[in-house]
Length: 390
Ligand SMILES: Cc1ncc(COP(=O)(O)O)c(C=O)c1O
Image (tube, rainbow, N blue to C red; front, top):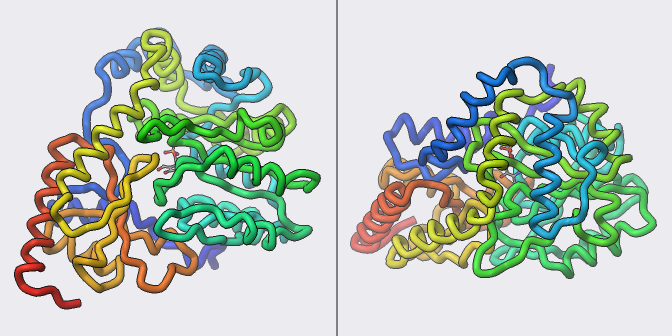
């Protein structure tokens, strides 16, 4: 008996496991392979020694929530009341899960956009809801709002957007949010905005948060992750910003799901934000240099790479190099080139025919990116030398 009979181990875990087995360079799963700031590591022992070792408040460390509200304000965001509008969660993932359980009920519909981050669909189904998948279309992965309008029914309770987008690497525009606001106007549904890559935008783009949108702010959950912003994906600390009514509902689930988040880690992040209030401001530039390095390394590989607009990732179209499906191509790369990447089709309920795109993670040491680029280029050159066959 299973409530999710079709769900196996995520593609990220599978590919990381395969990378370890094969001794491959791992540019698949989205986690940094470089060390964290030693000052941040020191904050953990400071927090433990200072006695932050018992249950944290259910809503999150009070001073950390105040620090986050101050960070949001200093970045030009709307004033957020940390008491009633901000909840610390177990990574962004738990905020997503708790928000969905809080508002989606049996028979309700929730809309996601494919390629979709893999946490949304199972959470909707565990809530008893129906997950409606609407594709973003390659190569630009833009929203087809007319199609969204047609998909709305009396049962639609939630629309989940992800901005900047994993794995599409696209970024929503102000017009996208205006159209979404127009669609949600006078309808009883909520927006869940997964904004964990809020600071990872490239080429001068500016993040458009639902939180700051005049209409959407009042009916949205916005989800964030210190894992992404401070390069600590393993700490599992994220948060959700939402107006008081939505926050109340979220906390009803959160308190019986995670209850509260690791006390010393919350305090360590608070101390770090106090000591380095501007740490997050350099994140975009940091990843932008890595994206450019990877792209330069692959310039002669035959892979076609529209520059990522945001997120930890860079997509690569390999159709000039091989004509197999993307799962097969990732297998070949791992076995023959010694590089782990992620295929795009598992992010779809119905992958487009002839999907020839894989996802590479740029949140890696420069040496890792250079080595991955060298290995992939050597592999594609050797295939070109042989005259490629499917
Ligand atoms: C789009 C997206 N949302 C949510 C998450 C989860 O964030 P966290 O690790 O903080 O749970 C990730 C992590 O990779 C992600 O890529």
